[in-house]
Image (tube, rainbow, N blue to C red; front, side, top):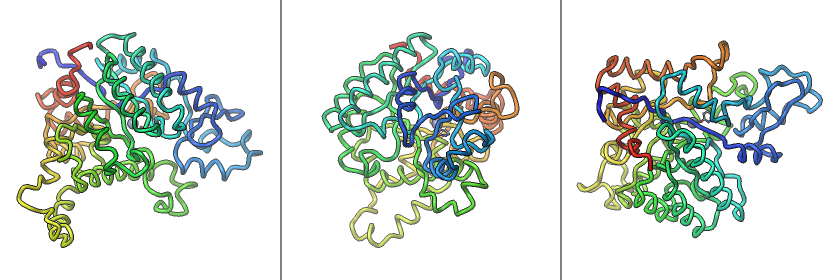
Length: 383
Ligand code: URA
Ligand code: ZN
């Protein structure tokens, strides 16, 4: 890509096609969308902690409770309107967005309908992208609850979808996590078709770790700021320990939130491996072992959704400046004290972090802001 015409690319940005919103509206257990009397927008309730908060509010209180105490998040046009996504991009100077369905994807869909649901969601994403050719690409969604043959057939479907560059994936896999040997054929099929996995958290950590005061006093801070990144860290560490990256050397994973805490903890993971008698006695720590540092530099990309140059520098040190990609996490984290149609801190903070870590308008900053995404995800090609 010519650096004289650098592109700004947002690779972490979510959309909910209208049919998916309808599906959520029809549900009574998480995830679901529900209207509350007196609240302007319906609320989207996805996290287990939010369901607990909902249980604590007696239904008689729903009409009187202040909006800031309602569980979940208001679901505004930012979630499903393509015009709104383009407005967000234009407001923030984003040339290209690689959109993806947000958590919890199709994790809750029954096995019998998962394949068809994935097909319709992924086709909807293709159609959305075709309305703004060259500006929108997408990560598709897999029907993980479907039978294995349906799941593999879904990869066959998405590989032929125009504008598709990979899949967004949570950490549960088929129910046993991403170190499950049964997932290796799925990883192989994705790798063979050059479909990058965008790994994104949803389940966080068990709510007991946040203590009894969390639900009422600390809002979403602990599960989102700490639970999400730890979930990603644990999932990838398990894949690494299970040898998934060696079993599928062409696998490419883009990790949300700058890899959780992996860049910070990779050294400790290494130390624990070489000092583990069990691993050593099993011959798993031999001279041909690829370290987690190598995997971070060879098979992993990291988004730059970390909101600070301190974390971003660690991510760049761990994976390399050519493996970081800018993102916003739109439509999550809207500004609370200014117009939602204006500027969002998710853009300004993450962009400032890039400038601070790499220098304003430096070649490295241009690469992270868009050049890397254009190359890695082949965004120069409209197919
Ligand atoms: N909260 C979520 O549930 N998902 C995101 O992607 C960001 C915040
Ligand atoms: Zn996200």
